Length: 288
Image (cartoon, rainbow, N blue to C red; front, side):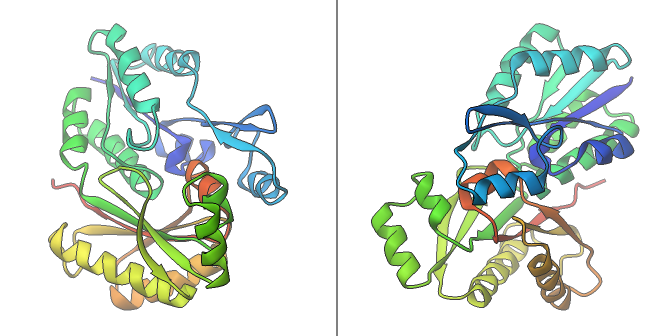
């Protein structure tokens, strides 16, 4: 049984990395000033942030049904089954669309809704590749990943309220007051649902402290892994790599010897929160 693994570029996995890892990545489309771009195909991280800072009109979109079907069909020429891991259904309709399309494949395509995005979605894709190499079927891989759906959390702090205001996630009045008071909101993505307000900070240092405290609580109370011996730690950022590496050192001091993965945050999230953000995540290791 040969099982191919597919995820989308919201995972942070580049096309080059995907080839090295033995999986396929579906590029997410973006509409920028009326033109369609595809992440990591004709739109790099650097180009995206230049356009974002220049005030371009940016919106996200789902991959077209044709792009999904063509990829599946190509993979099924050399594989028996496909496991498709899109971004969480809580933040996009692409998961539901893929599930609908998979109905015509008579048990050859298995769409996973394990409520992940960015660095946590990346880990799901890595786990799926390992499970496929161990001989698991597509159905078994989907069940394993969906059973672990809520064993992850992400906390994000933003550098500016401008993009939350632009996307309608906060009111102009709240944005003006927050800017005046220099508020750095801490947001969370739990159980793969929408980006929610979690706390407010006055400085980036305080925001990082809030996130690390929340992470510690999740490791203890949700993942049952106080010392982080059976979980992955991850940091994500939006065009803020130097701060991410500094944050990594703080995380390593709290959890000595635990590897920390750093990646740019998904552009589908970045367009709503802007550059300069930091995020920290934890993901429980799959058993076995």
